[in-house]
Image 1 (cartoon, rainbow, N blue to C red):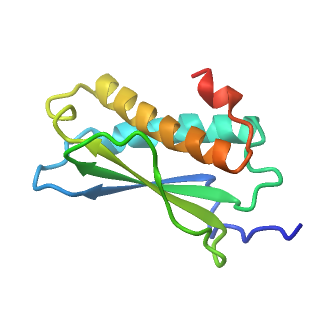
Image 2: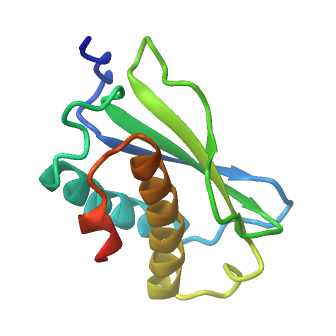
Length: 132
């Protein structure tokens, strides 16, 4: 098996934010998603999620829109950087006025949903993710 390309950094999980509405981002959104990214990235590494995978890391675009999606959108694995690009939409309605802990839980749920779906699609170990 050919090893996938390596990222230009030491991350295994990259999170992007995209607004599909005119709603302003909450001041704690970056803090919340960075905290959850670090937590879940550690789980991915500890459960050997990437060992033998056709990708070496995952990028997830969280789209702030009008609905909550129950599965991610996939793009092809990036041959140059080795990442599996995913995207999932989260409703901005539930984000408005949310506390930092509530934001973390919303992000955790969306990111876990996407990671578990991708893990099952690519035959990766997801038990550790499901137990969170």
